[in-house]
Length: 240
Image 1: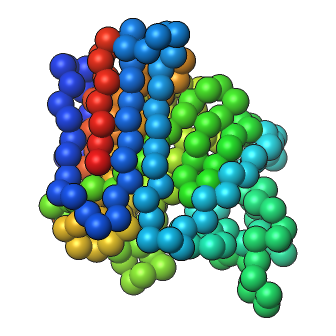
Image 2: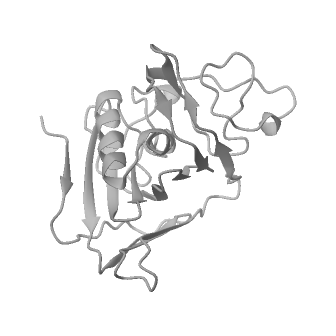
């Protein structure tokens, strides 16, 4: 079954019904900006409890056979608690934990790559050393699923997909393919198991081009359906 594709046809805007709390993202191609930059923006319009602190994750080499942990993502403060014996600590500050709070426990693991790039992350992956950047907005979806930590079968949230892309992708094109492949293999879940909040979109850019990446669960709740639409260089788009 084909569950994914990258589309290079003229831009089709993804839209969603207005939510009480909804992020707004914008992407502009390099001929649509004054200085020739490819631009992505993101307003994190959460419910007042999100953890938007900007953290730099250093580049790192990994021993052969290492595994990359996939963590749950509550998005509220603290979004991640490092320390202890957690394998593959993402490098979040040690002051993340509330008094008496235990380190975050992985939901599962995927094979690690030999080298991961340095990047900045907040609630989501933001920008890496290769200048791959992202902005996020939650969307409605005809299919929704629950994560492993909520009684479902899906491993990946948009939070962790964006971070893995920051760690491994040297271009926007590579990032969308990587995130789609991982989600198809491990399952994707949105911020809720309902119609509203079941899907996600990312504005994914590098210095040369930008894509709107849209993803939702498949009907089994164990895989994903995704598409990436390239934004023409002389155009811009908004997801709300």
